[in-house]
Image (cartoon, rainbow, N blue to C red; front, top):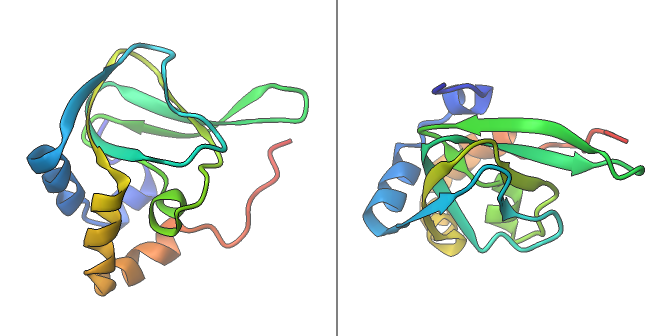
Length: 135
């Protein structure tokens, strides 16, 4: 399911795919395996070769709420965590067995910082102005 999310239609992520495929390492994630846990630093980001992932938040009662989905041929990351070195606010969990080309987040950050036009296009699309309340 390519270009499932609006942001994937608004921004050309060919640069991300190229970085991951040129410099990345293929990693396999089993269904239910966590790519990163909420509150952690996003050390790696990637390009999904096969499979898919969900972004989940945990409510005040401990229930997981799905707040995003990404599938094959898409970015696997969180823009705020990538660009501003903030802890990630969601768990990212494999929906099925998935293969991802991963690179250190810093590689993507440096590329975007060196391409300010890209950063200016991406911010309004990828950085929320306020966090929704999912509890």
